[in-house]
Amino acid sequence: MDPNRVEAERLLRIVEKLLHSRDLSSCRNFAILAQEIEQLLDGSDQILAITDVLLATDKRVNNHLDWYTVHQVEAHGG
Image (tube, rainbow, N blue to C red; front, side, top):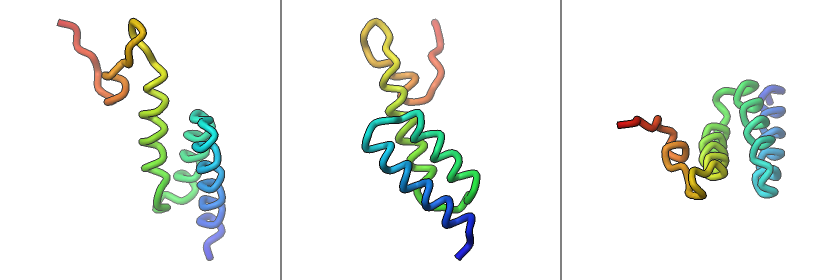
């Protein structure tokens, strides 16, 4: 088996543990690393999407969720 793929799969196992423990920043960093090592590895892009949304829910505006950030769109002032 390709050593890069083995390393990327190992990183994804770490990512899974980090996601379960809600260490989202580290989870995202390891998922990016896994994706850089093996671009065709299943799961890393989904994990990045999940962590981006979960990290966005931490951002608040007037004590409410910033839905623009959650949906990854720009807020346009009118």
